[in-house]
Length: 162
Image 1 (cartoon, rainbow, N blue to C red):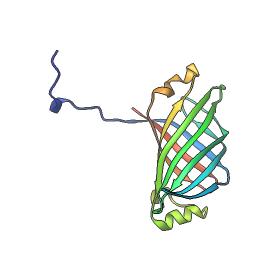
Image 2: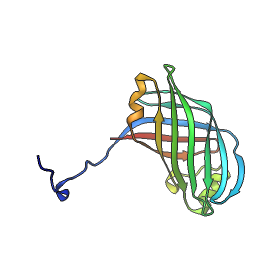
Image 3: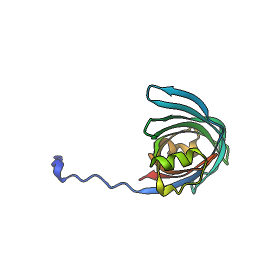
Image 4: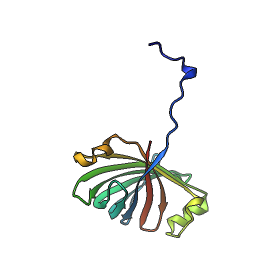
C-alpha cells in the first residue's frame, strides 16, 4: 500500500485521563548557592500520599527536588523520589517542570504565603519506572501535572496524556 501524502495525515489530538492527586511534603531547603545558571537549592521530600483510580499509596522519604532558580525567578523543577503503592509495589517517579509568575507572586510564595494558583504557572511532566507487574503500564505512559506550592507541601493533579 502506498503511503498517504504528508498533507493528508492528521495526528491524533491528545487528551487527558486523571491519574492521581499527589500531596508531597517537603523538608527545609538546602541552599547550595549561586551557580552559573542561577541559584541551586535542594528541597528534601519528607513523605506524602497519592490517590487515584488506578493506584494509591504513600510518598516515601528520601527523594528531593534539585531545583534551579534563575535570576528572573523561574524555578526549574527536577525531582526524583519513590512511591509505595498500598499493595506494596515500589515506583520510581521523576518530575521536571517550571514554576514562574510575576515577581510579587514569586516573592509571596518564597515567604510561605498562600497565593491563588491562577496567579502563577507551575507545571510538570512525570516519568515512572517500576518492576511491579501490576503497575507496568506506568512504564509506558506520558504524564503531566498542574501543581500548587504551599509552605511545606506541593500538591499536584497528574494526568496521563492519551
